[in-house]
Length: 228
Image 1 (tube, helix red, strand yellow):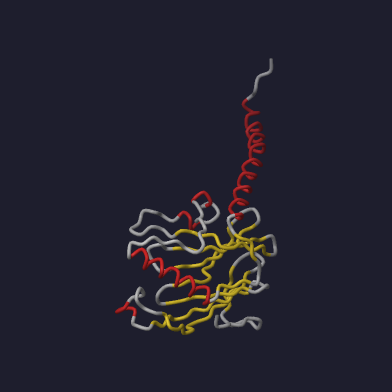
Image 2 (cartoon, one colour):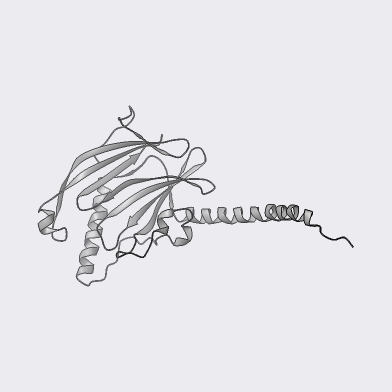
């Protein structure tokens, strides 16, 4: 009868690891595909305009007014937030819940297939107890490795930000100062009216073949900072 020598144990362990590893990779790949399936498909060019943001701000304000009056609120569109099961792909889902304010819900918005075997997702950070609403973009390899993230657009009582992304991956982000009918420090936003927005700054970023956002200090020849 043959016995298993100690010398053969490392070889056996390596064989077991090699046998088990594909199952783990396959499970992670399926989880990543499930994660991507949460996002509605879109494509470049892509934009989040000031019109989009103002519509969102109006809905957020209406919700805050309803809650303050003890009324029920039914949004026009209900998209379930992402759960913490996808935190291995999107670190924002790992944010601590042990704070005075609950963390923002992460709402899936769109996914975009990109060149060089990359895929991008755009999600909204929705604060239920604040008027602040942000949109961010994350870029992954097709195997689920996070490459880079970038804030794209959003709203708070002082500022509004819009963005556009062209077919070549040029990202243009415009920041505006919100102008209210009455001073915010006296009237707040509940009984106030946003009358206009003044452009404050424009930033340019290029999405590289490696899936990274690189900032350009000057406007590229193909970049046009439209006021929208």
